[in-house]
Image (cartoon, rainbow over all chains, first blue to last red; front, top):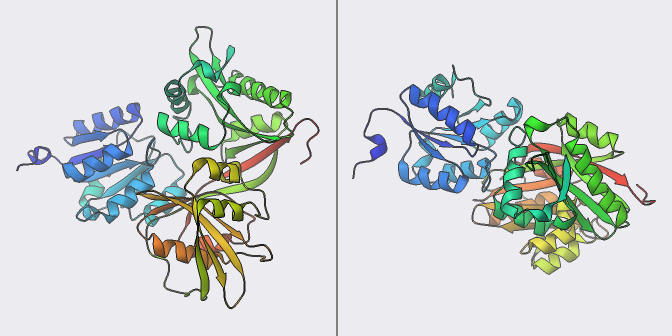
Length: 133
Length: 285
């Protein structure tokens, strides 16, 4: 069966972010730059979408209302087939803490909040291409 | 500005307000209504003594919760909407909760503030709170315990929730509010592992609550007569049994002697809190 998210050549980003303003901004920036964006506003929905929608990259907020980002990352990294999908933390935490979480949870990197709208798509693209690992 | 009891609102409304107040926090920690209700139940939050601040139009500006246990109180979830800060709402809600505690004969009020939250820390100091200690929030991603060193041979026993609470009662330090035996009883299903090493004769316990994805309420304590719990061994046993679960150890005081065992097992510091206390009604720190 064809995967609707893959029908175009545009990379699919799964954005797991509970803050609607942040999600709206990130989606707008990414869509402007030809990404297809899937949005989950809590951890449980994010897990289900990661398992069913086959995204090319996952952007993960750490502070989620139901299951926090670290636990989502831990689960995704243990799920067969998913560990190869780049998992990027998007967080307002201090850079040093974010780096520690990236290393501990096997993520590919982090993007600081608030996002820089001029750089955001390029940052995502670099992680997608494996250039920022 | 007007202050009204939090009972005027549903848990859903309080959750929405709480999440709005935390939106720009260093560590936002948003909640669902279900999680806030669990928090209220687990930590003995008294909603009838908790408060909501309103503006002149009746819109919520913020909230502050008061939890009560025998002779002591805990202030938690204080938050003010980002756009309405620095107008006295936080201070007014704190004073409301302190007056409630005072009227109930409470002798000590505790709270925690995340390291780096300077405005809240300054407010608490101005209200008379003094720092008591630092608490760490630790995380450990899934994985088996380290191969080296292999822990000492030991007599290992699984503890029921009731037995775990009995062990926790005799901790030689005061636990943070979220880890006190009342919390353990309210949360329910916190089990434990007890261990006595044959060689060193040191004994201790580790508590935990496991769900499909997480181990939580990981706390360690020594047996009576043991100075330092065999924490490396206890965590070895715990993570051997649950290698696939993400782990949270919350509010671990930095002065506990077994702290290095957490680092040896791959725990990392997520963030830190400062615990503060304020004696009331002649209470002594």
